[in-house]
Amino acid sequence: MHIRPQSVSSLLDVADTEQSLPSVDGAPEKSPILGLLDGVPVARHPLLSDRVVVSDVFDLETGSEAAHRVHGTAMASLIVHGDRNRSESHLDRKIHIVPVLAWNGVEEGFPKGRLIVDVIYEAVRSMREGKDAEAPDVLIVNLSLGNSRRPFHGQMSPWARVLDRLAWRYGVLFVVSAGNATKSFPLESFSRMLDFEDADFNSRATGILVAVNERAAERRLFSPAETLNGLTVGSLNQDAVPDHQRRTVTRTVEPFAGYTMSNPSSCLGPGFARSVKPDILMPGAREHLRAVGGAEGVLVQPMGPTRAFGLKVAAPPTAENEAAEGFTNGTSAAAALASRTCHRIHDALEAAYGEAFTGLRHIQRAVLLKALVVHPAQWPKETAEFIKGNLGPTGKGQTSKQKDNIRRFLGYGALDADDAVACAADRATFWAVGVLGREQSALVDVPIPACIGGQARLHGLSATLAWFTPVQSGRRSYRAVRLNLLAPENIDTLAIKPSKAQPDHNQIRRGTVLSRHWDGERPPLVSKDMTIRLIVQRELDQGAPVDERVPFGLAVTLSMPGVNEIYEQVRQRLQLETRAPIR
Image 1 (cartoon, one colour):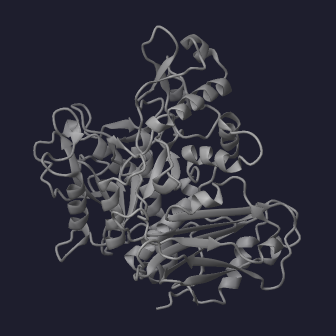
Image 2: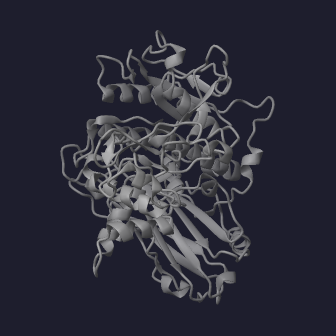
Image 3: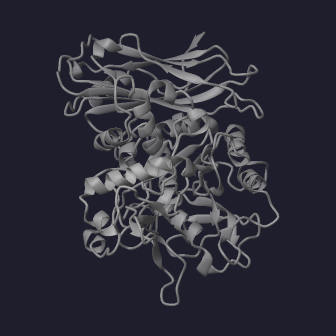
């Protein structure tokens, strides 16, 4: 049975909305929509004092000295302010923090005598459930944590299972770090460190890529990064360190100079049932390698953050400076930036659509944010070719395996946070949400602007579908509900074909986010008032039938670089349609 989505497909009209977001004097303070489960932060730090709300559910602040409150302070700073080297605007709302780690004399760890799953469950429940819920509007939860002692090897961990259940129960999008493999590893391509240091950037990058790939089994995702309903984030070798500070680096080597690549320490996919994981990459600093020990061969280890390669964040106070700042890196930082990006998208949608967006159920907004944050991610062309050229395999019929190697490192690709929020004149982005019962599908009609017709230039269509699934513990078909996104029947009239720069179609159907891209350079054939129809289809339930209706979010972008009439023409078409959700 075909249905219409609950919200009419709409133009994502968010250009310049962030400038209109600051609170008006006398207006009520907006409740937090983003929760952070992490270490105890320095809540009185000048960068955080009026930006965070701390709920000490497990009484971890007592006895946790300020000097040891490193990780939670850094993650809160990244979410609120972004990388301080970039001087970004702070978020408009406060973030709600429930500390789940405290200093135990050696490191920041979970409370003694408590199971991790119990701690996480209770932390989320305290925010969302009952009349005493402290942050009932939270729909994004950042989890820059992982169990390095339990890398993912095919079986869902209890921690990942509880995240999937909580996501479905509360309508919460968990943003989870992929994990950091920081142990040293050998480079068989070089016999001496001097040879490695003197090599050109491409030879050096090739040697590191091959070495990391050969140890892929040892560098798998850390639990709970295999979560199906959550968003898993890997670390991109990118930061905003000024050039004069970067030149202070000595006795270390930047591994992937020249390529937009995941860092050597960023844990690798795929995820459960060989789904695409990590979902996206976000900046985790331009990680460097240093030589460690070994009289023979070359043994290297990822370095921690420094002023020369790191993301600038709030840090515990010192005797001389209560407003101290430091540096962080890795997938924890990348996940925090992804959570910040989800928050920015939410604020932009709220500013543009008001009640039409905020009136949606929590779970519908959560799955829409999931779709929109993955939607702009893409494989950097040169990096994808670099991985394919060095890891292969070569020969006919190997395309799927080549793409499998690429997605293991890149997921759906690198994400530019600003690109995820902003509009441009030569593209139009749409969104739709809905719910699907058994054997139902949703029809989404996308208007095609006349201005792209007959132009022989690069153009494309991208569509990203995301949903939450109930889970079936103890069953092989753990993911109870599977959705699919069908290509439009008349897509040939747009003269576009499936892009080569994306995971294989069979690979993208294994998780709960599915992103497809079509592109081409031949002139499209566009008729008056033309539309193309996308179909979101609920496939037969896996295992026992599921009666619950499943929420989905869909993002669609049509673009032709340089044709600046696209946005306005689509906008005019949509003015004839209602934007209010269908109740």
